[in-house]
Structures are given as structure tokens and as C-alpha cells.
Length: 308
Image (tube, rainbow, N blue to C red; front, top):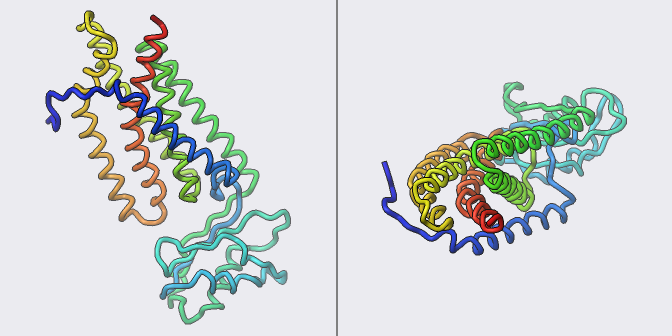
């Protein structure tokens, strides 16, 4: 099945526009990261406790915040009103994220749950099990170890991709692919920073999935370029790249749309737990498809012209 037949869009003529557009988006994302002092990390990396509870009615965040100003944890009182408190998917569900403290004693998560239950008894479900949605606790040392492992995972993936494409194609193709993948991750990270979304372990999994998806799309185009270089020896290099992208365009659009619709359904109906993961995948599918055409291929063309 081919949606588009016999197209000839001059993508290489638009490479400067593509570079400018990507540069603007990347600068906005980096500016947001600098302004906020880096990405907003979840407790997976920073350590802490996250409690999510469900009330029978919609709750006001300010009421919850006021009630947490004096929480009794085994005889000692703590002020948790300045911690991160937000709705957890629906107006009746609340999540409270408590940062790690140097001196902690007792079960803080259970103390917060009991405090909220006692503060709003008329809005607590009859079944106590229905009140607690989730409890997560990560120590600061574990969070630091996870951060290091995540960085090593991403760098290892990019390094292996560089070696693989250099062997299968040429080194200039590997540089184009790495540039496109780095472009995709930076833009997705910047969008998360601009929107104030947390970076958690599922989001890192989404980043690595984006890398794999974008690479697959890029390799399909590179493979067609390699075939056309052999079959069209008399054609100009930019013409060969344009032809290859146009020949792969129908396949690229079909693959991207089917993947996008799946993650869109997950984003709409998957629930709060995978909401950000699905959003990262949606951004990644769009950016990955774009970078295969407007980043990876033009960089290969520029490297070829310099090589000549």
C-alpha cells in the first residue's frame, strides 16, 4: 500500500529551513533547561516518597496543602505544605511528593495517608483500600546510582549505533544518524522542560524507544540511498538523496501514522501512570520522522560535499 505515489519533493533544497527550525526549537528547550536549572527529575533519580490517594469528590489543592502544614510522624511534627502537591489524573485524586530529608524516622508515607484521611473524613471512600492509589519510595543513594546507569545506557546505545552504521554504510552516514538521534532526544527533553513534566524511568525508556524508532526510519532511507548510488552513478548526489527520500516517503508516513495513533490512544486512555510516557512517544514519533528526512540525510549530503 502506498499513500503517495511518484512524488518528487526537493527536500535537500529545504535543508536550511529544516536546520533553522530545529535550531530554534533546540535553543528554546535549552533555554528552558537553563532557566529551571535542569530537567525536573522524579523521585526515581532524586529520591523521596510519593503518595497518591483518591477521594470521593474533587479536592482543592490549596486545602490539601493547608492540611499538610502539621503532620504527626511518630510524635514529631513536620510541615509538608511546601512539597509538590498536584492532581493525579482526576480532580478527586491527589499525589504528594516528599523530598528526601537527612533525618527521617517512621513511616512518612503512612503518616501522610492517615493525616489526609483524618483531615477530610467525609471525602474518604468507605473501603480503605480504595483510598490509597500508590506509594513509592526511593532512597537518594539509589537515585544517584540510577542517574549514572541511565547516562551510561544512552551513551552506550549511541556508541554501538555509531559502530553499526559505520560498518554497514559509511562513517558519514553514522554521523548523520547520531546527529538525528541526538536532535530527537534534546528536542523531546526540551519540550518536557518547557511544559514542566518530570523525567522518570519510564520517560528514559521512552527516550531509548525514540532512538530505536528514529534509527529504524533513518536506516530505511540510508539503505535506499546506498542502492540508488549504485544504480544512478551519473546522477548528482543531492538528486540521489531526494529520490531516495521520495521513494521511502509512503512507507515512512504509513509507519509513523500507525505508531502515532497507538501512542495517542495510550495518551488519551492509558491513565496517569503512562500518560507522560505516551506523550514522550508521540513527540518522539513526530520528531524522529522529521529528523530522518531533514537532519540525517542533509548532514550526509553536507559531509559528502566536504569529502569531495
